[in-house]
Image 1 (cartoon, rainbow, N blue to C red):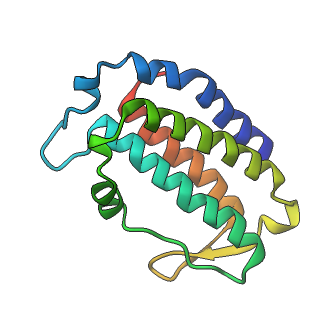
Image 2: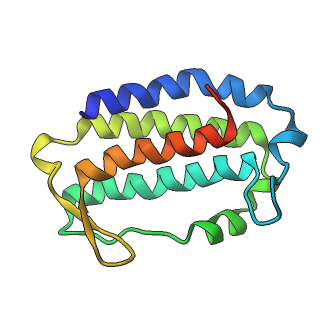
Length: 147
């Protein structure tokens, strides 16, 4: 499972950065609705997701049921992704996901059933979190570009 997920993430990293760069900056920063993120903010959100899931994938193997969650809207607002350099965001997204693909392949099979706790107190396994990371990633990538 981990290898297939990591391979898919690497594929996305191989294909999408150039496609992101082809989107005109004005389009990349356009809000579809006043309360919806721009494509640039979605990409920033995916960086935040990578950072938080990085914590889950590592701490979930070390600690007993760590609690890792974040307030996604506040993270996007505080970091002002809308004003960030587009190329920096694209490079950071790509690099972080290439690293996460590596981390995912290093999760020992016996650790896949270890659990992390979410904001609501419920627990899920590392296996679920790894699979869900890719689902979440692709969901938001499709909001930016069809590939």
